[in-house]
Image 1 (cartoon, rainbow, N blue to C red):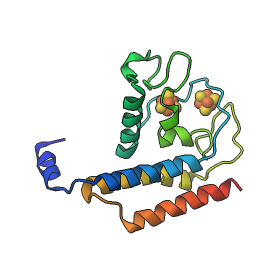
Image 2: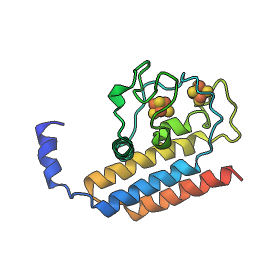
Image 3: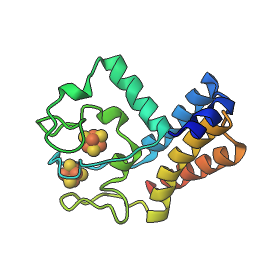
Length: 163
Ligand code: SF4
Ligand code: SF4
């Protein structure tokens, strides 16, 4: 962050705790609506990943609560959350991209066929939502009604896929 960004950040409203908690619940509702995969835990897909600010917060809270230190795990591949037995140590709070892998169009696993495939556009919306809600918290300190409606649509379409 450059000096101008730092100065501007002081002018931005601080997100209130309620808005942050709400955003976390919204992201988690999407997590729960994504169909699971019978993953064989080969660890091949666990490489470099990116995730939004709100997901980082969810992971940081989980890591602190569980008393984990990601640095203490053997880093055999790029993601520090993958241990030497190919287990994800933050599996319960793994980011959106990890959940979409294997069950989304264009992100299919070469070893396991999913029961349901999420269309590419909807998969990108799941990721986009996380970044959007993080940006709203950072810039206006709240979640807009438009984003709330978008979230409802994403969850509804994900649930519909599983019927
Ligand atoms: S999703 Fe597929 S590639 Fe990734 S760990 Fe599971 S079985 Fe391996
Ligand atoms: S967070 Fe977990 S599932 Fe995602 S890449 Fe890292 S080890 Fe794999």
